[in-house]
Amino acid sequence: GIQVEQSPPDLILQEGANSTLRCNFSDSVNNLQWFHQNPWGQLINLFYIPSGTKQNGRLSATTVATERYSLLYISSSQTTDSGVYFCAVAARTNAGKSTFGDGTTLTVKP
Amino acid sequence: KAGVTQTPRYLIKTRGQQVTLSCSPISGHRSVSWYQQTPGQGLQFLFEYFSETQRNKGNFPGRFSGRQFSNSRSEMNVSTLELGDSALYLCASSSREASTDTQYFGPGTRLTVL
Image 1 (cartoon, chains in turn brown, purple):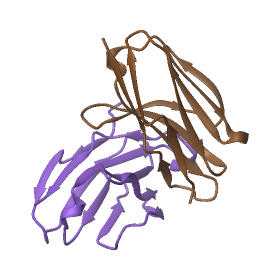
Image 2 (image 1 turned 90 degrees about the vertical axis):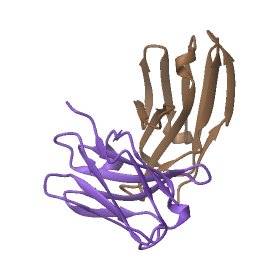
Image 3 (image 1 turned 135 degrees about the vertical axis):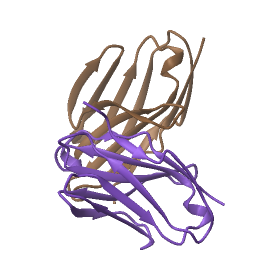
């Protein structure tokens, strides 16, 4: 099946710093989403981005489908950005099944 | 619009028992997917239902089963519980089939097996 690798596994920042999270995947995808998991376990949608670039406030994401990677940018980070960020993909060859990466744990210090 | 709801939120069972978890998708959504999250294995796909049909299934034993009703609500059942089934179970809904649409997740059911 499709492999999803996220890097870095852990990231510690000072409030106000910028960061880039990466997601590499091993096959063509129909679907790619970025999520933020809050301390209570809820997965919050950030972006649905199988290709192209999107921005939402301090967050933006870019997926280069032909090179099989996606990037999530967080600018001017805040303590509330702390948590685990997941990338999830659904391969064209396996419709209906989303595969998650292991996540990046972000800690933003005040 | 109300989000995805899951019941119960917390559950404690003993080995050998069975459990049924429920997921109500966003109104109008026809696809429901289930995932298991554990510290050791991460987030793993269980199954997806679309218009009452199971479209795909992950690599879980037959003790894990599910179904979807005509109103798109879904249940998953785990029989003969094992300690390793302790996990956060998450469901997600989407308006079209999951691989071509945004998935929205519920708050999860935290299952503890003693």
